Image (cartoon, rainbow, N blue to C red):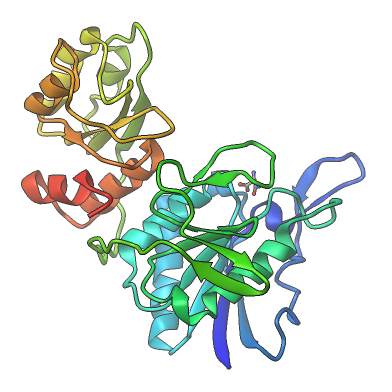
Length: 324
Ligand SMILES: NC(=O)C[C@H](N)C(=O)O
């Protein structure tokens, strides 16, 4: 029988609705109390590590979860499930994907409806996540996100709806598997990427979204002494309004790495346009075009790369490509 460690960190999955209809954190986590899930099939160990709404989760919290899992791997655990608030779930999941050895299944899940609401999805998602973590086929697939009967890679999954239970989607590539009839079934292989075994996290890594008519104001504002890196969600295939360029150049002159992704939901940033502010010019200026990640994930990847003391070409290589 496999031993699965459940690490609880908070979020709606551990919350309840009060008499006024408000969703509030609980002192006692109702999900952590569920000890009989898949009884006889798995041995469940529980660690109530945090009780945080996920907007309160920081890279330091993510690092603590990573360190807890490293200890569990050393102790011989067979798989890990993490319950987490959905607002920043994709960032924690991707942080773990980038920093953990790909040796045992690590599955992140959450809920869109709190524990006592009609149609609450928490217990169901938790059970499915345990099932996936205890499945042999889940080995070697990087960190997984299991929600609403679907299995996604942490690398590409994103929250797409504020309240719908079918909120987690993988744009461009789709989910890699489904949970059906009490089984995890996979239909896509995962391409391995580099892992960075970091022991601290840097601060000063920012994320800015481009818009029509944007100028250099926001770039000038983040041109501070503590700024270590910047991700820009560019327009379309990876372009920027020309008025932003002088302020961006000032950051590049200070050797601050700048990563460019697209603000589009689907597709990858590419250097295909040759006009002022087009992707070709941005690449020539030294921006790192990152293929396939959204802004918040590219920021996690840049933060992990910088925390691993990568710079120059090795940082660009680490950040650039999420798919190979
Ligand atoms: N569904 C959720 O978990 C949302 C909640 N605000 C959180 O991220 O903690």
